[in-house]
Length: 484
Image 1 (spheres, helix red, strand yellow):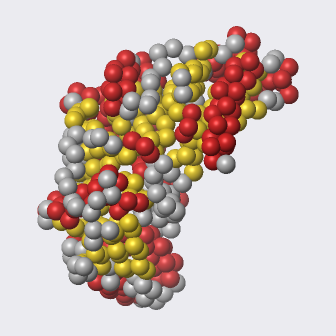
Image 2 (cartoon, rainbow, N blue to C red):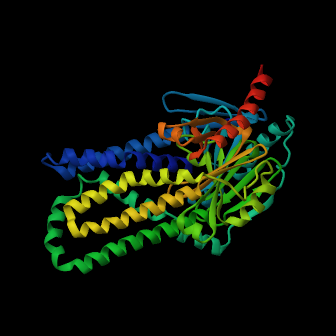
Image 3 (cartoon, one colour):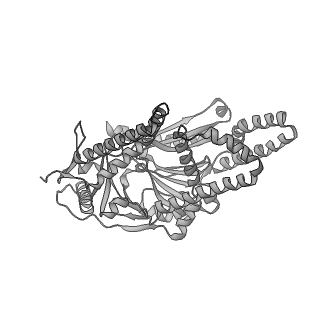
């Protein structure tokens, strides 16, 4: 048995960064609220800062010192905890996925961060095990032990099978992905979230009152500032997307998909083929117009703090007509449908009426209070009617052998491909008005991460619902009888 090992000392820096991220805003708010009534605010603030810094430094150092791990041929053993010691023994045969990432610090020292997901993980933590700074050799050793344990059960370490490339993002694709991403909203939301945390530190009301006096003669300048702000957010989102998805490649081994990505922080995600629960194809309006889509894999891995472990980007940007030629040879159980059974024509008015519930009251209120100007609200009614028709025409379903595919739209057109034996539950429901028109709603669930995933199609033909129900219930009866 080997001796217990510690992580590389840079792991302590990672612990510090995590604690600073968690405590920076509470400490700042506490300092400001106390020093506001103090006679010597600067002195008190300095004391709080020094105490907080000392606390973070000592606890981070102790966390690093008290974290040890041992690699043996049967299992990975981890002990951690400053005051309460926590021991974990992880058999290699239980390991379902091993994700590698290299941040700036890890790359400087030739190290990697390893995240391990297991079959029996609770999903409550970041991962079943996280080795934040170990050598590439030891990371490879863990991967080899896991591959051997799941392969033939022998204890001799052998090389992990080499894979073949099934996808590599090009410079042109990376640029299109960045330009058409929705990252601007994320950047703006993040800025607003930060400002909401520091509203006690910045005198927004005083600034707003001064801004009102200055704003009246400078509307053109204000419009330019707003435009520049959104443009800057778009540039930040574009750069962030390019850094995240640069060098994106997908390799396939005998039993796994290996995804590598990132320019500054390199990541490697391993997805066992048997853990794939569904394939999700997403097309936002811009990408759909260009005939492009993003493909995700819904996996049984992941956790509440590691959602990427359950919904993994497989093809960040790809032409819609090329998805089948890439997916089907690599994941042979899944077939990408070329056509769908549409909804009945009588369902279209239900889609329109659901949108009118929102639009019509707005039109009525606008006509009452805005008079002539209120007529402009009719544009909203027409737009929502058109959107309802688009949602109706998008929705559909298809059965291919042992596979159910659902297509629907919210803001994004989504296609979900599910194998019969991976569907956890199939729900069919009918409202009073749906019963009148012999329609119903279908919802299918697969296991994904902590919760579940799947798809929903509203206002399907009742006969189609019964067809899908019998298709699914027969396999369920067979599974139940085989389990007895």
